[in-house]
Length: 250
Image (cartoon, rainbow, N blue to C red; front, side, top):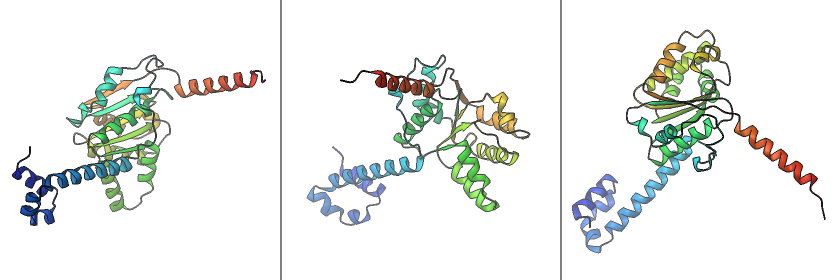
């Protein structure tokens, strides 16, 4: 059972100054502990709701429904370790590499969601959204503020690097962002291109070697191989519709 001092310290952490001003009355009435429980519970709920909204993870399939058999190569143990968020301890990074449709984004969204549930701040964005947002800013001071926005979360997820090509300016901004987060915050990147091909994603950019070097230092790199699961599902749906059309009607 919590002591009077324990309860008072909880009230101080919550900054319930009205309650503290009438502490003796609340303590003697016996409802101080219940009020603190209600306040902590409601604040935790609101904090989770706010962090989920700010994370912008979107809808996703839980890993419990992930078809681990479909990929020809997929290190499930390594993905489970990422879900445990151990890489947060040393501000490590994670990179998931694989062709289109093998579940990279699904894995990234699940890790991001787990991080939010564990109390961390998270931001999920595609590479196109991130770099398009930064490139649209022409004021140096506004750009610094926006870079600070992306540098702030405990976990930044940059999805779909490699699906588009970018200019040298885009590459410089991505390098600046990764450099700001280097060894201070964790970054998770999904990409359909091996690092050796990133010079084609950012053609002519001088900073790519340094960008990749900072990204992969103290990082878990997971490669997934296989055919597109989305294409598999689409084919199955088409086959099912065809069977239904052929089925005799009574």
